[in-house]
Amino acid sequence: MPLRVACQMDPIDRIDIRGDSTFALLLEAQRRGHELLYYTPQDLSLRDGKLIVRGATLTVEDRIGSHYRLGEARTENLADWDTVMLRQDPPFDMAYITTTHLLERIHPGTLVVNDPAHVRNAPEKVFVLDFTDLMPPTLVTRNADDVRAFRAQYNDIIIKPLYGNGGASVFRVQPGDTNLNSLIELFHTVFREPFMVQQYRPEVRQGDKRIILIDGAVAGALNRVPAADESRSNLHVGGTAVATDLSDRDREICARLGPELKKRGLIFTGIDVIGPYLTEINVTSPTGIRQIKAFGGADIAALYWDAVEAKVRQ
Image 1 (cartoon, rainbow, N blue to C red):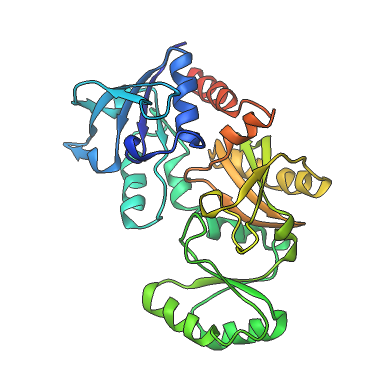
Image 2: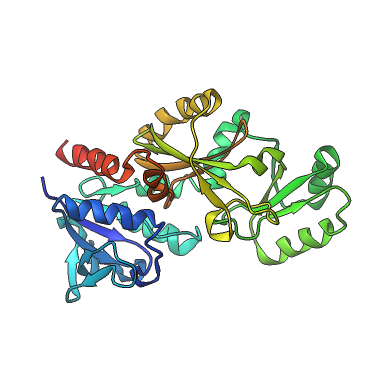
């Protein structure tokens, strides 16, 4: 059943197709005969109660340097489309939140993936706090005394912004590091929100596991191993993707999260696990599906469209 698919994403000319999950989803949608409409968040408008976009027909090809073609720009009413892929990357700021409010006006008549209201209410480092028993020791605060007390208890800690992404502004403060007070001052200057402080887990040297779930069910996983001179395992800061299997603990975590993800309409999610601990739940634009397929894992793009097509039929 061919669908009319609108994709709200970052500028397509800037993506690295070798590892971009949105591009993998577009390739599979095109293979299935779905019509693709491309637009970026700034092209979204509400006029006389109608959610409209200035977009263009998109065709894609898995070829570096020549991976897309766009038709003539035109105005479309998103209520006339079957589904919207909400796939722009954070930062999870007021601009991002505003798009979720706008898209909520057409969902579920036009299926938005992921559900925009629950995307808004489930930023990566906040939603995960519903499962603190699965997490390493964690503090969310702006209070410097609380941070110092947490560090005194756990010695080796990680400090990161509550609404950051991609490993940006993530710092490890090791025992004996005298920069903690300066770092707290920096976070107070740069960020208005509380920030997150966690116990550093040495298991990260063996990797930070990304597990993809489709409609609450495990679809695949990869391990991201940090570079020797890095505490962060994110691929775009030098982490290396390697094949992995799920442990019993991984499956226990997924079994806890799966029903809640499904209930919230979070069809495409990625969770991060370090050792035995859940650290994040990614609902905005999870990545990793091209690497998982390359390692012989599931074709998660196909599983995504299977789920979306079934929901549209319903």
